Length: 421
Ligand code: ADE
Image 1 (cartoon, rainbow, N blue to C red):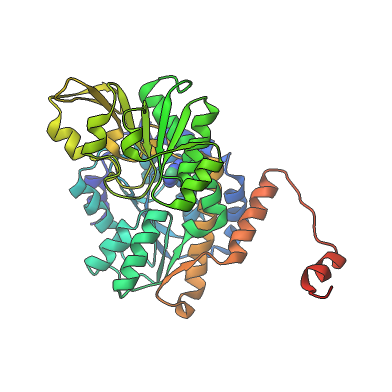
Image 2: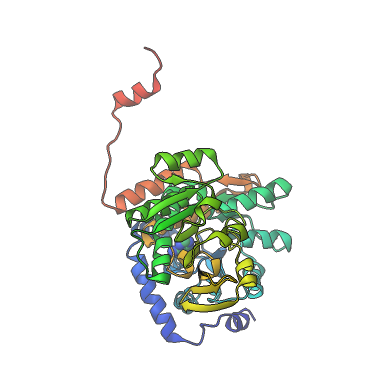
């Protein structure tokens, strides 16, 4: 029954050449994720996930395939849905299916299909639910599909914000570890991963020069910081818009021009949203933009750019290039939108590089194991990744990078614990 349902839902099932291309992508990613693979190899003799059912709602990329195959190698049965209707790499989904994972995901799902895929994962009665953006946790709560779940994890800033709201309105039905809050996650994945992959998405979609362009980045959190530095590295003139005075000041001291969005609108050539907020670029900004302005979103959800306004007011819409739509506005001006306003790095490129996902998925893996071992002692709240896990992931990554560091001497330990003059 389950197989039949999978076959009807997974459109890649009939294409073995897709699975072969997904296998090559998996092998390439795996060979660049030694911190994660070493952790898995060390754990695998004990088969700590033997007989466990793990649900995942993740972007289906080559890096994710390394994580999912790893869960299977540790003994788990894994159920897989996508974390975005447009981010699935079909060859990777086909490869995972061919390896025995239960996959409900393909690129270009409708909104309805997207949620049906998540429901299929939850109806498979996972014990741990791994999520990216919190859609699976929210559906589990709204539709009473959480009866076997003893705990979960969440990958993103946006997801943790939603889950904290769910916790406040309550009740949260199981503990959830906010993987994003590990330092080995947000300092690297959000900054270096999104920074590089978002620019990668912009370059693949437009094939334009950044040097000499005015690049407006909306939001100066870790993601905004990463994108801003990379855009500056390509010799763009970078401007930052913010609502948080501290972050705005930080951007100013980092040497970027800081200004309100409405003033940035007529000056920017390229706009990238990275706020986690809704309606960041809206009618008043779109009306002020130059002919040829390009828009991209780096935030988890497609709510940061008012795409509805663009669609309703455009006199003509056409595909200019793959993943790039041209909107001709009533005054004749052309606005270009990357990836329909969904995460540009995953829709127009391949998501974060394997090196950073190695750390993010190490945190996911060790957090899932922590949940399995400790769930009965944990409060049903959104909790942080234990500090020992974070430190262990940093050490593993240093080791995998061939780096070693100093240790404190006995004298230094004593000194750091004393208070006397
Ligand atoms: N989120 C951003 N990049 C990703 C990747 N490469 N794999 C999985 N999730 C991601």
